[in-house]
Image (cartoon, rainbow, N blue to C red; front, side, top):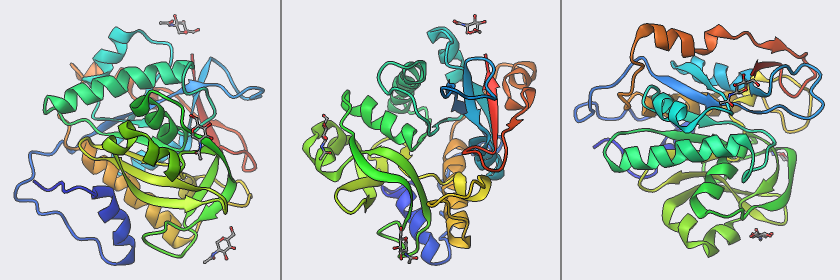
Length: 298
Ligand SMILES: *[C@@H]1O[C@H](CO)[C@@H](O)[C@H](O)[C@H]1NC(C)=O
Ligand SMILES: *[C@@H]1O[C@H](CO)[C@@H](O)[C@H](O)[C@H]1NC(C)=O
Ligand SMILES: *[C@@H]1O[C@H](CO)[C@@H](O)[C@H](O)[C@H]1NC(C)=O
């Protein structure tokens, strides 16, 4: 089996040296046409560009496309049956960053349905990876612990190093809530489920910046790998260095390689075509916006 614990750790550590290719011999048949769902979320308040009820920042779509996946947007107000059908059609799910309630938003409702489907599928040997970025990281922590254990930190616009790999400031941080190492350590459910891969500090509190599940292909970053190559607002914390962009592509490539282990597929090419994000066009919001381009959905 090519998947030791600390897979993502190995990927991120590879930033220091050449990546070690995984032994292909024991690898199962890979699905080289992976399709990854990206969950939409409630529109931001006072979004002058908004139409419909939900959005996906285009950077998440580009991030996955650049690593060799296609994207299906997942609307927030669908039925459980529709989500279940979609689950068995896609090869992984990305929960993006954002700003919604982690316990009673439509985003959290859909995330919860997919999370439980993913746990059940993986338990049954049906490989299905999840990726959480920023709010997605936080949502995964809430789903696993059944509690909101987050704490306010001073991390709204800072670039930080990943402690275990590099002294360089390669990660863009735009969150005010964090999962502290203290609360993680005190919560048995979180401690049993996730392994900490990296931490950071806002100067006061040490928080988890990267983690992966011990027995599931679930990965979460509190930082924003998708921003370095694809967002251009001039703001402290935005980092476009070669190392930051490389870290971004390593994480995307890692997650897409995980999705290639899933054999889920749409029941017909027509159904696949109708689901793909190519049916929507992103709206250009301007260089000085937090998102250069955004997709909107009903
Ligand atoms: C979702 O919202 C759209 C637009 O408001 C509506 O047309 C559709 O019926 C809704 N679907 C569900 C399942 O609520
Ligand atoms: C731990 O979680 C609680 C919520 O259950 C939160 O109020 C508190 O600030 C957190 N403390 C730390 C140090 O993270
Ligand atoms: C990283 O950023 C901090 C400010 O957020 C700065 O003090 C520090 O010098 C930077 N480190 C490097 C290696 O550039």
